[in-house]
Length: 168
Image (cartoon, rainbow, N blue to C red; front, side, top):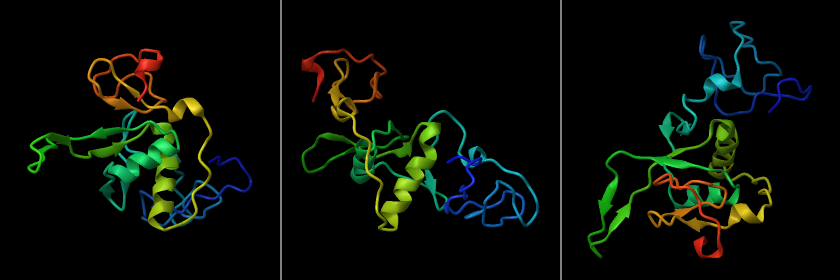
């Protein structure tokens, strides 16, 4: 998404001008035609290095489908949760309830676009090809499964250990 590209158009992500609420989709420049306010795409991303992803004013939950999508496109993610551990009554085992999806700042609009396409039943772009990013590994410290493109366990922050016994 390069605003200097002559074919650039503001994507249809439902973004509105922060000043006058004009819908910004399709604009050839990063300037609201209604009020003249210049804007950046960056200002529409929530704060933080791993901001939560929101669509239609609601946080996206990292359910199985969302997790699979993130893995397929090799996008690192975290789940933000409060007291979301639940007890499964039927088997009596603890299970981690899905949390709110958080992605690296630089991947925010890529993720937003993928989720929008899924929601609208639109064709998805081909996923990147990378053998290493497809191989999940298990943390030797807490036994948590991690995406292949993580060098540190998302759960306990232990460094990944290289070796064949560490993959899932």
